[in-house]
Length: 245
Image (spheres, one colour):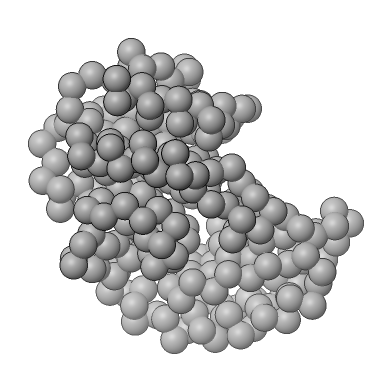
């Protein structure tokens, strides 16, 4: 794995970007991760030169509100819902599973009694954040989480101090990337994907198969299939600026 430099790019590109931890630093509370006006300006300019998608675990409605750039693709809920302009798509099995997810959310609501726990109910998926929980209480959170979901047919993944609950279907950011590229009419342009967490690994693997550039945003990258790395959102911004030059 090598550090990503401007010289690694060439020719036509398709830019696929995660949000939290990639375009913005990870914050103690999700609502504090706000895209800077400067970075929005940069992304807007880039969207006129390259096909672009923002791929995130956030709901697509929230993602569109946070980024607020017309004409680009937005994939929310780890790719279970995808929007571009008037085109809106939801993975059919996940849409049918929504009522079940509502029941899981109700079971997990009791975790809010543990100080610092934040539950994001995003309709198709759900996140339990414990970044604000005291270290000595983290095991209690995980135990309560496990007890609440015992016997449920759902998929659980763990990220940076967050437990993700998803429908139990074979769908992830990697498959969402494939879907978006097909809709874009991908014709072997260089695909670049930037992400910072375990949920981005599926996308990294997909991009690698397409001989693209997969970039993990981490100052200590390890156990990843990404081909390149950047140390943090500041370096991401630097690279994006270089694409305008």
